[in-house]
Image (cartoon, rainbow, N blue to C red):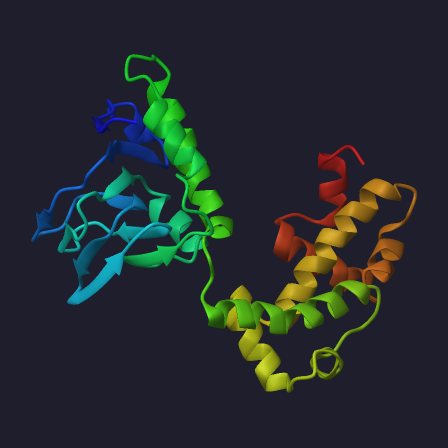
Length: 271
């Protein structure tokens, strides 16, 4: 691929929750200095060679398999360290941009490591779009949305993140296997071989919620499946199957997490 750069028309795209402002590929990325940052979010994927990224008083060397993300208005500089520094990039913005990056565990400018050294599929498709295509803008919006959603599984988590997820897995499995009955923190923690305090900290850190919140969400999700599969069942029977002895309490929890009562849910979905 030869070096290229595209600047989409964004007049209509500004109405979308996510839109691309520029996208490009450099066979060799030259030195770039932005003392006042850039107005949009940027994602750069290093494909070959090495460079140095300077941002927020930090300096890091980046190479193949590295992805560096720059948030708007963050002063930065990047410079090649090899005779060829191959980089593909996309700049984007929109009201959902920050939240989707957060979903991928990217909450600020920095460097992440990809599981692959080949160009991300959505980024390559963005580069291949024809600027003259009447649907180019909407297709770019779709592709940047896909790219951000896929980042979570494309990035290598930190050792701590991987360790925390593995530590929590037995607790999650125990919960899933026992949703039909009362559960308490002590037995869940015991099943995962940890203290109740550590269990709560791990849930908050990994899933951003308390254990009982997770249990209630899973019970409500399970109850919806049961309403579809066992349509002749009464709601109090459904409640009992997902661990609620009190049908009224089940209805209150259901409404909290679904925004409607179980009866309204069934009627809305023709059940």
